[in-house]
Amino acid sequence: MSHGSPGWILFLAYVTSVVGSLIGLACAQRARAAEERSHEVAWTALGAVAIGGIAIWLMHFIAMLDFTIGGSAVTYSVPLTVLSAVLSILVVYLGLSIVTLARFTVIRLICAGIVAGIGVTVMHYVGMAAVEFQGELSYNPALVAVSAGIAIAAATVAFWFTLRVESAGAMVLAGLAMGVAVTGMHYTGMAAASVRMDMSLAPSTGAGVFSVVFPVFTLSALAVGGLLWALMASVPDPIDVRGHRPAPR
View 1: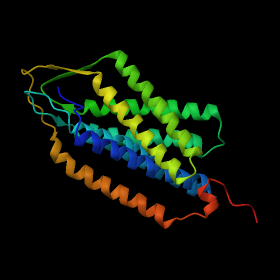
View 2 (view 1 turned 120 degrees about the vertical axis):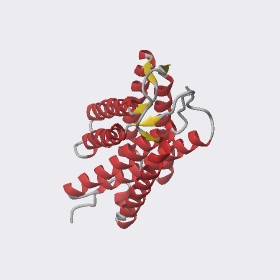
View 3 (view 1 turned 45 degrees about the vertical axis):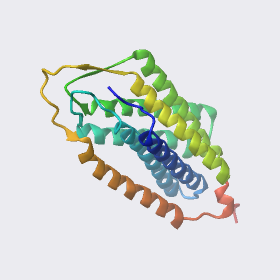
View 4 (view 1 turned 90 degrees about the horizontal axis):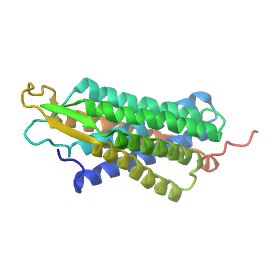
């Protein structure tokens, strides 16, 4: 089994995670500045698509392009791959909503981090369950626990950033840090995996990785474009960029 080799795939996965994180942070700023509840919910949902769908799930999928098993073709179950994407967005939305749609408390932040972190961990292993080959995957429980811990810590820090980041420079630093955490969680989870080949099993019948790449990247490009358009089309007042509501008139 080969995964995690240094190179352009690791770099692309990290950059994707950073870009998704930055867009998600910007959406969270809009949610904090919104005056109407419906706008808060909408921006929180868009932030979940950016962080859960792009920074986490798309990063995972890109990193999996480097996953090879000698002697067996690797394919993917499309339903499980789609399920992993949906799970990632839903758990991040749930976590974000805990901290953006209600009064901030440290307890809420910790609960949001735990909920999203566990959800992202489940998403990772559902995504791994989508991998089909002539053999079986098994996992080192200790490294699985470490990957879950990293995911919880990363989610908690990400949600804290969504509430506290104000300046453009701080947002960039936050995005870079979130990219390291998310990518680190993925590769720790992959380090927990080991392969047992069984050539007596029927060859895998799922979708080949490159037959999945085009629709995944097309949809992701549309999502990024839509999110950027929404951000540019809704420019808040300067005071709102700092996360403060306008004073009542």
